[in-house]
Image (cartoon, rainbow over all chains, first blue to last red):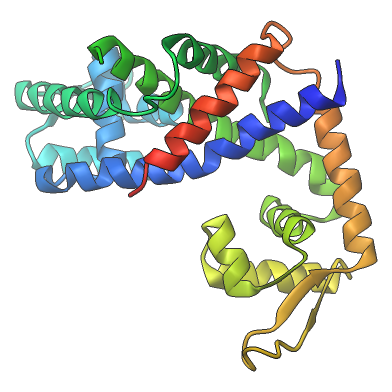
Length: 145
Length: 145
Protein backbone atom coordinates (compact mmCIF):
# COMPACT_ATOMS: atom_id res chain seq x y z
CA UNK A 1 0.00 0.00 0.00
CA UNK A 2 1.54 3.29 -1.09
CA UNK A 3 0.22 6.51 -2.57
CA UNK A 4 2.41 5.71 -5.57
CA UNK A 5 0.47 2.55 -6.28
CA UNK A 6 -2.86 4.40 -6.21
CA UNK A 7 -1.40 6.90 -8.67
CA UNK A 8 -0.24 4.08 -10.95
CA UNK A 9 -3.68 2.50 -10.98
CA UNK A 10 -5.06 5.95 -11.71
CA UNK A 11 -2.76 6.10 -14.74
CA UNK A 12 -4.22 2.79 -15.96
CA UNK A 13 -7.76 4.12 -15.65
CA UNK A 14 -6.86 7.40 -17.30
CA UNK A 15 -5.69 5.61 -20.46
CA UNK A 16 -8.89 3.61 -20.83
CA UNK A 17 -11.39 6.26 -21.94
CA UNK A 18 -9.37 7.65 -24.90
CA UNK A 19 -8.59 4.07 -25.93
CA UNK A 20 -12.28 3.15 -25.97
CA UNK A 21 -13.11 6.25 -28.04
CA UNK A 22 -10.22 5.85 -30.48
CA UNK A 23 -10.60 2.13 -31.01
CA UNK A 24 -14.35 2.54 -31.60
CA UNK A 25 -13.51 4.98 -34.42
CA UNK A 26 -11.06 2.54 -35.99
CA UNK A 27 -13.54 -0.34 -35.74
CA UNK A 28 -16.26 1.87 -37.22
CA UNK A 29 -14.10 2.87 -40.20
CA UNK A 30 -13.29 -0.79 -40.89
CA UNK A 31 -16.99 -1.75 -40.80
CA UNK A 32 -18.28 0.98 -43.07
CA UNK A 33 -18.25 -1.12 -46.26
CA UNK A 34 -20.29 -3.84 -44.57
CA UNK A 35 -23.01 -1.33 -43.50
CA UNK A 36 -22.47 -2.47 -39.89
CA UNK A 37 -22.09 0.01 -36.98
CA UNK A 38 -19.97 -0.50 -33.86
CA UNK A 39 -23.15 -1.29 -31.90
CA UNK A 40 -24.34 -3.81 -34.51
CA UNK A 41 -20.88 -5.41 -34.48
CA UNK A 42 -21.04 -5.74 -30.69
CA UNK A 43 -24.37 -7.58 -31.00
CA UNK A 44 -22.88 -9.93 -33.63
CA UNK A 45 -19.97 -10.65 -31.28
CA UNK A 46 -22.18 -11.44 -28.28
CA UNK A 47 -24.31 -13.78 -30.38
CA UNK A 48 -21.22 -15.44 -31.88
CA UNK A 49 -20.10 -16.20 -28.32
CA UNK A 50 -23.41 -17.08 -26.66
CA UNK A 51 -25.39 -18.64 -29.53
CA UNK A 52 -28.95 -17.56 -28.81
CA UNK A 53 -30.07 -14.69 -26.58
CA UNK A 54 -33.06 -12.44 -25.93
CA UNK A 55 -32.74 -8.69 -26.51
CA UNK A 56 -32.60 -8.00 -22.75
CA UNK A 57 -29.91 -10.69 -22.46
CA UNK A 58 -27.81 -8.98 -25.15
CA UNK A 59 -28.38 -5.56 -23.54
CA UNK A 60 -27.21 -6.80 -20.15
CA UNK A 61 -24.02 -8.33 -21.55
CA UNK A 62 -23.17 -5.14 -23.49
CA UNK A 63 -24.23 -2.66 -20.80
CA UNK A 64 -26.41 -0.97 -23.41
CA UNK A 65 -30.03 0.23 -23.27
CA UNK A 66 -32.57 -2.37 -24.37
CA UNK A 67 -34.10 -0.04 -26.97
CA UNK A 68 -30.73 0.53 -28.62
CA UNK A 69 -30.10 -3.21 -28.81
CA UNK A 70 -33.57 -3.77 -30.30
CA UNK A 71 -32.71 -1.25 -33.03
CA UNK A 72 -29.40 -3.00 -33.75
CA UNK A 73 -31.19 -6.36 -33.94
CA UNK A 74 -33.74 -4.89 -36.36
CA UNK A 75 -30.97 -3.43 -38.54
CA UNK A 76 -29.04 -6.71 -38.49
CA UNK A 77 -32.24 -8.58 -39.39
CA UNK A 78 -32.74 -6.36 -42.45
CA UNK A 79 -29.23 -7.27 -43.61
CA UNK A 80 -30.00 -10.97 -43.08
CA UNK A 81 -27.29 -11.28 -40.42
CA UNK A 82 -29.53 -12.34 -37.51
CA UNK A 83 -32.90 -14.05 -37.28
CA UNK A 84 -35.43 -14.34 -34.44
CA UNK A 85 -37.67 -17.14 -33.27
CA UNK A 86 -40.30 -17.54 -30.59
CA UNK A 87 -39.09 -17.98 -27.01
CA UNK A 88 -40.81 -21.00 -25.43
CA UNK A 89 -39.99 -19.58 -21.96
CA UNK A 90 -41.38 -16.09 -22.49
CA UNK A 91 -43.95 -15.24 -25.14
CA UNK A 92 -43.06 -11.55 -25.52
CA UNK A 93 -39.27 -11.93 -25.62
CA UNK A 94 -37.99 -13.41 -28.91
CA UNK A 95 -34.77 -15.37 -29.20
CA UNK A 96 -32.12 -13.85 -31.49
CA UNK A 97 -29.39 -15.86 -33.26
CA UNK A 98 -26.87 -15.38 -36.07
CA UNK A 99 -27.73 -16.59 -39.56
CA UNK A 100 -25.04 -18.42 -41.54
CA UNK A 101 -24.34 -15.14 -43.34
CA UNK A 102 -24.01 -13.37 -39.98
CA UNK A 103 -21.66 -16.03 -38.63
CA UNK A 104 -19.45 -15.81 -41.72
CA UNK A 105 -19.45 -11.99 -41.71
CA UNK A 106 -18.49 -11.74 -38.03
CA UNK A 107 -15.71 -14.29 -38.52
CA UNK A 108 -14.29 -12.28 -41.42
CA UNK A 109 -14.60 -8.95 -39.56
CA UNK A 110 -12.93 -10.40 -36.48
CA UNK A 111 -10.09 -12.10 -38.41
CA UNK A 112 -9.35 -8.76 -40.10
CA UNK A 113 -9.34 -7.02 -36.70
CA UNK A 114 -6.96 -9.54 -35.16
CA UNK A 115 -4.60 -9.22 -38.13
CA UNK A 116 -4.50 -5.44 -37.65
CA UNK A 117 -4.15 -5.67 -33.87
CA UNK A 118 -1.25 -8.08 -34.34
CA UNK A 119 0.78 -5.13 -35.68
CA UNK A 120 0.22 -2.88 -32.65
CA UNK A 121 2.34 -2.17 -29.57
CA UNK A 122 5.43 -3.65 -31.22
CA UNK A 123 7.56 -2.14 -28.42
CA UNK A 124 5.68 -4.17 -25.77
CA UNK A 125 6.56 -7.77 -24.94
CA UNK A 126 4.01 -10.59 -24.81
CA UNK A 127 4.50 -10.68 -21.03
CA UNK A 128 3.66 -6.99 -20.75
CA UNK A 129 0.47 -7.50 -22.74
CA UNK A 130 -0.44 -10.49 -20.58
CA UNK A 131 0.13 -8.33 -17.48
CA UNK A 132 -2.12 -5.62 -18.93
CA UNK A 133 -4.95 -8.10 -19.44
CA UNK A 134 -4.49 -9.40 -15.88
CA UNK A 135 -4.55 -5.91 -14.35
CA UNK A 136 -7.57 -4.76 -16.36
CA UNK A 137 -9.51 -7.92 -15.43
CA UNK A 138 -8.67 -7.44 -11.74
CA UNK A 139 -9.86 -3.82 -11.89
CA UNK A 140 -13.04 -4.83 -13.74
CA UNK A 141 -13.85 -7.38 -11.05
CA UNK A 142 -13.31 -4.88 -8.26
CA UNK A 143 -14.62 -1.61 -9.69
CA UNK A 144 -18.39 -1.73 -9.46
CA UNK A 145 -20.74 1.23 -9.13
CA UNK B 1 3.80 -11.47 -35.09
CA UNK B 2 1.32 -14.22 -34.30
CA UNK B 3 -2.44 -14.55 -34.35
CA UNK B 4 -2.14 -15.18 -30.61
CA UNK B 5 -0.65 -11.72 -30.06
CA UNK B 6 -3.51 -10.04 -31.97
CA UNK B 7 -5.96 -11.97 -29.78
CA UNK B 8 -4.13 -10.85 -26.64
CA UNK B 9 -4.31 -7.21 -27.67
CA UNK B 10 -7.97 -7.78 -28.43
CA UNK B 11 -8.41 -8.99 -24.84
CA UNK B 12 -6.84 -5.74 -23.62
CA UNK B 13 -9.25 -3.65 -25.67
CA UNK B 14 -12.23 -5.74 -24.62
CA UNK B 15 -11.61 -4.96 -20.95
CA UNK B 16 -11.47 -1.21 -21.47
CA UNK B 17 -15.12 -0.34 -22.17
CA UNK B 18 -16.64 -2.02 -19.07
CA UNK B 19 -13.86 -0.50 -16.98
CA UNK B 20 -14.66 3.01 -18.26
CA UNK B 21 -18.36 2.52 -17.54
CA UNK B 22 -17.87 0.97 -14.10
CA UNK B 23 -15.24 3.40 -12.91
CA UNK B 24 -17.37 6.36 -14.05
CA UNK B 25 -20.16 5.03 -11.82
CA UNK B 26 -17.84 4.72 -8.84
CA UNK B 27 -16.44 8.22 -9.39
CA UNK B 28 -19.96 9.59 -9.74
CA UNK B 29 -21.13 8.00 -6.49
CA UNK B 30 -18.13 9.48 -4.67
CA UNK B 31 -18.84 12.97 -6.05
CA UNK B 32 -22.54 13.08 -5.23
CA UNK B 33 -22.16 14.93 -1.93
CA UNK B 34 -20.09 17.64 -3.60
CA UNK B 35 -22.79 18.25 -6.27
CA UNK B 36 -20.14 17.58 -8.94
CA UNK B 37 -20.78 15.26 -11.94
CA UNK B 38 -18.18 13.08 -13.67
CA UNK B 39 -18.03 15.62 -16.52
CA UNK B 40 -17.58 18.53 -14.12
CA UNK B 41 -14.85 16.58 -12.32
CA UNK B 42 -13.05 15.99 -15.64
CA UNK B 43 -13.08 19.75 -16.30
CA UNK B 44 -11.67 20.41 -12.81
CA UNK B 45 -8.89 17.90 -13.49
CA UNK B 46 -7.90 19.40 -16.83
CA UNK B 47 -7.79 22.88 -15.30
CA UNK B 48 -5.78 21.62 -12.31
CA UNK B 49 -3.21 20.30 -14.78
CA UNK B 50 -3.19 23.05 -17.40
CA UNK B 51 -3.93 26.16 -15.33
CA UNK B 52 -5.98 28.30 -17.70
CA UNK B 53 -7.84 27.14 -20.82
CA UNK B 54 -10.61 28.20 -23.18
CA UNK B 55 -13.76 26.07 -23.43
CA UNK B 56 -12.68 24.69 -26.86
CA UNK B 57 -9.27 23.89 -25.34
CA UNK B 58 -10.92 21.90 -22.54
CA UNK B 59 -13.24 20.16 -25.01
CA UNK B 60 -10.34 19.07 -27.19
CA UNK B 61 -8.37 17.62 -24.28
CA UNK B 62 -11.40 15.68 -22.99
CA UNK B 63 -12.71 14.59 -26.39
CA UNK B 64 -16.08 16.06 -25.41
CA UNK B 65 -18.50 18.32 -27.31
CA UNK B 66 -17.89 22.03 -26.78
CA UNK B 67 -21.50 22.65 -25.71
CA UNK B 68 -21.26 19.99 -23.00
CA UNK B 69 -18.05 21.54 -21.67
CA UNK B 70 -19.66 25.00 -21.66
CA UNK B 71 -22.48 23.59 -19.53
CA UNK B 72 -20.01 22.03 -17.09
CA UNK B 73 -18.12 25.33 -16.86
CA UNK B 74 -21.37 27.18 -16.15
CA UNK B 75 -22.32 24.67 -13.44
CA UNK B 76 -18.84 24.85 -11.89
CA UNK B 77 -19.04 28.64 -11.97
CA UNK B 78 -22.32 28.59 -10.04
CA UNK B 79 -20.63 26.51 -7.33
CA UNK B 80 -17.72 28.99 -7.23
CA UNK B 81 -15.23 26.32 -8.34
CA UNK B 82 -14.10 28.03 -11.57
CA UNK B 83 -14.01 31.63 -12.76
CA UNK B 84 -13.62 33.14 -16.23
CA UNK B 85 -11.80 36.20 -17.49
CA UNK B 86 -11.44 37.90 -20.86
CA UNK B 87 -9.08 36.30 -23.37
CA UNK B 88 -6.67 38.92 -24.73
CA UNK B 89 -6.02 36.68 -27.78
CA UNK B 90 -9.64 36.09 -28.75
CA UNK B 91 -12.49 38.34 -27.68
CA UNK B 92 -15.29 35.72 -27.88
CA UNK B 93 -13.46 32.90 -26.15
CA UNK B 94 -13.12 33.40 -22.38
CA UNK B 95 -10.33 31.91 -20.29
CA UNK B 96 -11.42 29.49 -17.57
CA UNK B 97 -9.42 28.80 -14.41
CA UNK B 98 -9.93 27.15 -11.00
CA UNK B 99 -10.78 29.33 -8.00
CA UNK B 100 -9.00 28.59 -4.70
CA UNK B 101 -12.13 26.68 -3.63
CA UNK B 102 -12.00 24.70 -6.87
CA UNK B 103 -8.32 23.90 -6.42
CA UNK B 104 -8.89 22.71 -2.86
CA UNK B 105 -11.96 20.65 -3.80
CA UNK B 106 -10.22 18.88 -6.68
CA UNK B 107 -7.23 18.10 -4.50
CA UNK B 108 -9.47 16.56 -1.82
CA UNK B 109 -11.50 14.60 -4.41
CA UNK B 110 -8.36 13.29 -6.07
CA UNK B 111 -6.62 12.36 -2.80
CA UNK B 112 -9.71 10.36 -1.80
CA UNK B 113 -9.70 8.63 -5.20
CA UNK B 114 -6.03 7.69 -4.94
CA UNK B 115 -6.56 6.31 -1.44
CA UNK B 116 -9.38 4.09 -2.73
CA UNK B 117 -7.45 3.03 -5.86
CA UNK B 118 -4.52 2.07 -3.66
CA UNK B 119 -6.62 -0.83 -2.33
CA UNK B 120 -7.40 -2.31 -5.77
CA UNK B 121 -5.79 -5.13 -7.77
CA UNK B 122 -4.02 -6.44 -4.68
CA UNK B 123 -3.18 -9.64 -6.60
CA UNK B 124 -1.20 -7.66 -9.22
CA UNK B 125 2.42 -6.65 -8.72
CA UNK B 126 3.69 -3.10 -9.22
CA UNK B 127 5.56 -4.35 -12.31
CA UNK B 128 2.34 -5.71 -13.80
CA UNK B 129 0.59 -2.39 -13.25
CA UNK B 130 3.55 -0.55 -14.81
CA UNK B 131 3.33 -2.91 -17.80
CA UNK B 132 -0.40 -2.21 -18.12
CA UNK B 133 0.22 1.55 -18.27
CA UNK B 134 2.94 1.02 -20.89
CA UNK B 135 0.74 -1.19 -23.09
CA UNK B 136 -2.28 1.14 -22.85
CA UNK B 137 -0.13 4.18 -23.72
CA UNK B 138 1.36 2.36 -26.73
CA UNK B 139 -2.12 1.42 -27.96
CA UNK B 140 -3.39 4.97 -27.42
CA UNK B 141 -0.53 6.35 -29.50
CA UNK B 142 -1.17 3.91 -32.33
CA UNK B 143 -4.95 3.53 -32.39
CA UNK B 144 -6.33 6.61 -34.11
CA UNK B 145 -9.57 6.89 -36.03
